[in-house]
Length: 371
Image (cartoon, rainbow, N blue to C red; front, side):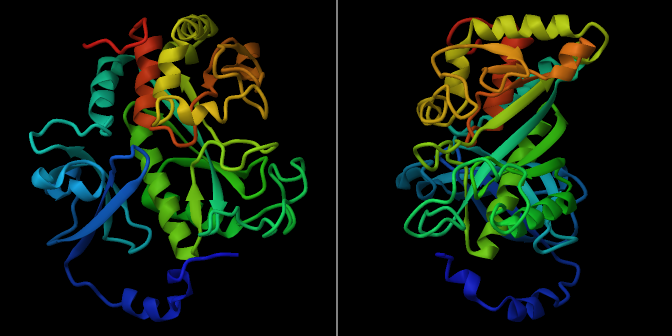
C-alpha cells in the first residue's frame, strides 16, 4: 500500500512540540479554493489574540500565479475571511478560516462562487432554505490505487461493503472516525457517516444548514478530510468515477427544503419545484460539477444507482432518478426532496445557488438571471 513519506515521520516526536505552550498568540490557518474549482490551499498567520468573530480577522493575500488563479505579472490575490471554525489539528484557541478569493481589482475570482451564492441566499432568507449534502469520497494510496484493494487485481464484487463491518468489508475506517471527530470539534455541522457501495468508498453528511452555511460547512469538512488523510499518508478523492467499470461512482446528493415544504401540505411546493427543475435540466448539469458536466458524464450513466445525464426523472424512493422524494415525505405529504445529480467534486455554493434560482426565483433557460 503506497503511503506518503510524511506519514512515516514520527508523530510522537511531533507531539512534544505541539504540546509546547503558545503564549497569547493564536495560529489562524486561512483556507481557499484554487483555480481548479475543487482544490484547496491553505497558509497560516499569527494573530495577537483569539478572534471572536469574522470581523476580528484581517484580510490577507497570496500568489495567484501558483494556484492557477492569475498570471505572474499581476499575481496578488486577496483572501477575505468568510467563515471561522475551531482548529482540530492545532486545537484551541487556534482557528481555521475559510476565505473568499478576490482578484487584484477586488472582483470575485472565477472559482469564487460564494459571493453570488450569498447574494441569492439573502434574497430568499424569509423562506428559510435548508440543505443537507451527502459527500461521497474514495480513499486512495499515493499511487492512485484504492486503499486496501489488491495491488494487481480487484476485491470481490459490490454487495457486502455498503454500511459493512469487518476487516474484509470496511477499508479505512480509522480515517472516517478521525474525520468525524475532527469535524465535531471544529463546529462543522456533520450529521452522519457510512461506508459506501464500492470498497474504500465512504460518505459523510453535512446539514441541515441554512443558506450560505451549507457551502461553508461542506468546504470546511472537505478541508478537514484532506488534512486527516495527509496525516495517515493517503489521499481522499472526490472524483465522480474513480474506477471505471462495474463500480459505483461518487456523488454529492443534495437534500433541499423550504419552510413551506416542511409545513402541512408541503408536498405541493415540492412538486412545483420538481416541475421547474424538469424544465432546466441542462443548466443544473452544468452547475453540478467543476467541468460543466464533463465529470458527471462518466458517473450519470443510468447504472449504479444513477440517472442518465441526458434525461430528467423524478420518483418516490427511486435511486435511479434525478430527483428522489423520500418515501416518508410521500406519506406525510411534507418535508424535502433529494437532487441526486451533483457530482462528488461539485462546488456546494454553485449547487445550492442553482436550486434557489430555479425553485424559488423561478428562473428559466440555460443561463442564470442577473438580479
